[in-house]
Image (cartoon, rainbow, N blue to C red; front, side, top):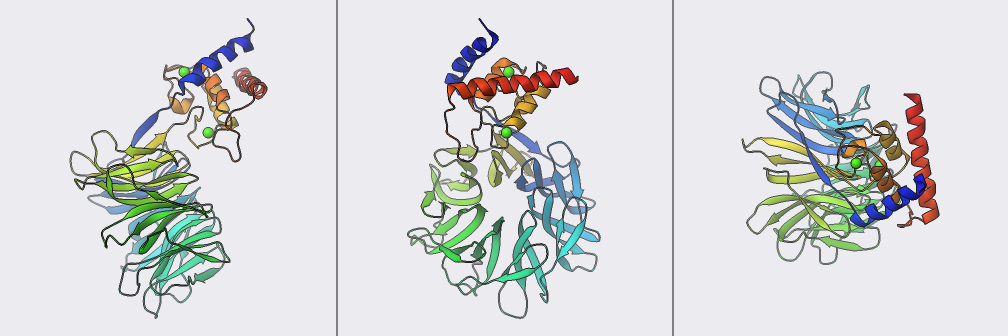
Length: 407
Ligand SMILES: [Ca+2]
Ligand SMILES: [Ca+2]
């Protein structure tokens, strides 16, 4: 029996199993009293932590190392979002004045709408930053900053609007529930046109997350001010997001078709959830109470919970997809490289390429990768041709051979 024929048998055996696994990793800044993770982009997780003797700081966790993110002269930092290596947040200086900032991994720059008394960033996508500002007029106004020019966004609804999210040039706009704002729709802005976001039956709609032209958020219906449902909008169709057993739902973040948020059950217990367009998964780290899922990037979810000592802790949840070693939502050459680097090693985990859970990275894991090649990629046909499978299997082993020869 040839080596490739051996492998084909393994592929057939393993494909039937459909092995998948989820992991929780605790995010806990060393020495901190509490840690709050808010945003995730690839391997990068950002948020805030508190130390009894030095107060509140921002942090970046790249999956390996924790780094404090405090702009110069900050006495209190509040990190809000990350996109690649760009991080945005607000801070209070030693004169008790508050500012917004962008940190690009090397340099801190101030985000300040010209003439505004206060600028508050909310989100970042590449070099694009959005948020809101206050000037002499009542309520807040939304802005878009492309790294060079500030633009005021003027959706066709009165009230206190802020830009809640950005994805490339696409911005979502939502409104404060204050005396300046009557209930109404949220808006999607593609740089040219404002489109109202209002699920069927919605009285007041809040947009919280955007990914491409996908928008998520929450809306109240005629059931009163305390009725809230999550929603997902793909540019054409609204899907109500109410996890089983929920009485109150917020969808906070979207990445492709993955939606995360939080809901309350009839006992008013909160839970995080992940909805992939077909299935709801409750997100609750073992031993946690009141978990909330704040943000999603690919198959990675970050959120917070209360631990046994009543402190806020944070978690990274990875919803592993077969073959996706680096957990970026796509099975491709990057995953093949991970397998190659860990080939035949011991005490390996999922992120090393051990998809079978036996602690080693071998041909069974490679065959899972081959069977799921390009899962999650744009426009990918779900079942590869057998000839393609053989080709990819050869590719994986080619990379393995290359890696071995370099050692
Ligand atoms: Ca991957
Ligand atoms: Ca294995």
